[in-house]
Structures are given as structure tokens and as C-alpha cells.
Amino acid sequence: MERVSSLALVLLSTLMVSTSLFAQEDSTVKKVIDNSAMINQSAAASQAKIDNIADQIDSKLQQFKALNKEIAGLNVYNSQLQNQVNNQNQEMADLNAAIDEVSVIERQITPLMMNMIDGLAQFVALDVPFLPEERAQRVTGLRAMMDRADVAPSEKFRRVMEAFQVEMDYGRTLEAYQGLHIIDGQERDVEFLRLGRTALIYQTRDASSQGVWNKQTRQWEALDSSYRTQITKGLRMAKKQLAPDLLMLPVAITD
Image (cartoon, rainbow, N blue to C red; front, side, top):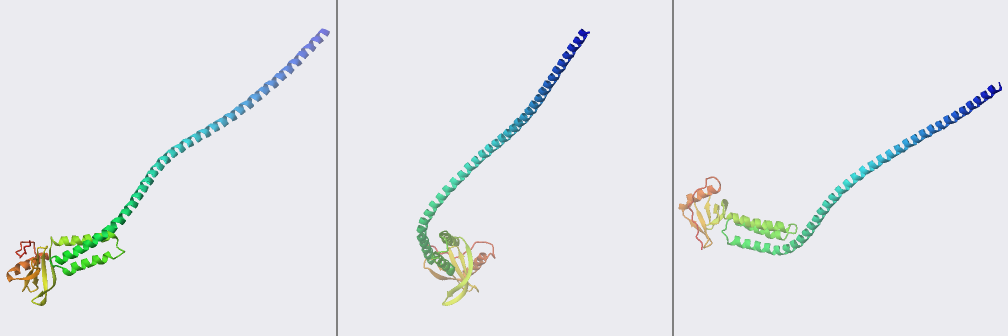
């Protein structure tokens, strides 16, 4: 009986020890599991941080590449602008040099224009005396223009050259115009017919009298009535009232 009781106590003790061991093991496993869960959570949080940092680095890298590309474009643009600035500076230098040259040319061209106007006035005085008032006024106008400060030298030169061009055009045109002429001591209303600078002829309005300018004697000479029809025809041609045709008119021969 005593042996049974002893055995029971041994079994009870063993059971209690086993239970205690199981309880300790269960607590240890639970701690391990809890620690593992905490490690996993920490690892997940760390990975999230790593992923976030990687995303930020990738975003910064893209921004860096974009900025580098923009900087490269700006460098090209700035280089082009610098070339334009250099060209403009060169143009400014050229313009300043040209302005200095213009000042010299202006001082030289003014006497030239004055001489040209004097030559034009002399030419008109020695030329066939057609449109005397108009041509004299043109020369007078040029002289008055040269004294004006509000007219640029370029404009003065243009107008002088224009006056010479008008005189040149007279040499190749046919013209009829009205005017007054002294015939036998009396002032008569006549029509003048100019054939370039080859001939200058007048005829009274009633066609009763006509005459021609003699370049050699520099005087007017009367023409007989045989030229009346041809002069009338020439006047009509000059007025665009008749088609161009052959005219038989006196022409002074000059050496």
C-alpha cells in the first residue's frame, strides 16, 4: 500500500514537472512568436521606408535629368543670344563708322550739289528757250532748298538729281503748251511745239503766223505758211489728238 502511494506521488510529481515544463515552453514559444511578429512589422516598416526613399531618389533623379536637359537648352539659347549680341555690337560699330563717314561725305557733297545747281542754271540759260518760267523756278527752288536746315542732305541730293532727270527727259519727248510770244512788237497768244531739243516752234491760235527758234543765231525766225499744216499736225500729235506720224518741219543744223 505504501508502494502504491509512493508511486502515485512520483507520477504526480512528474506530471506537475511536465506541466510546468510545458507551461514554460508555451510561454517561450509565445514570446518567440511575438518577437517574430514585431521583427516582421519592423522589417515591413523599414521596407516601406526604403521604398519611399527609393521613390524619392528616383523622383529627384528624374528632376535632375530634366534640369540638366533644360540647362543644356539654355546654354544653347544663351550662346545664340550672345552671337546675336556680338553681331549687333558689330553692326553698331559699323553704323558709327558709317555715320562718321557720312559727316565727311556731307561736307563734301554740299559744294558738289551747289556746283550742280549752278551748272543746271547755266544749261537752262543756254538751252532752247522752252518752258522758261517753269525751268527757272525749278532752279530757284533748288537754291532755296539748299539753305533749309529741315531738309536732309540725302533729300537735297535726290531733288537735284530729279531736276537733272527732268531736263534729260525733255530731250526725248514731244510736247505742246500755250504761252505768250512777241511777234512784230506785239504780245500774242501762241502754242509752242517742242520736238525734244531738236526744234522749238510756235504758231498763233488762228494759225496765221508761225516761227522757229534758230540755235545758231539764238533768235526766233518766222516761217512761211507752207509749214502751217505740218505744225498744226505736230501740235495735235503732241496733244494725243492724232496718231504719231512723219512731220516735215525745219530743224536747225548745229556744229
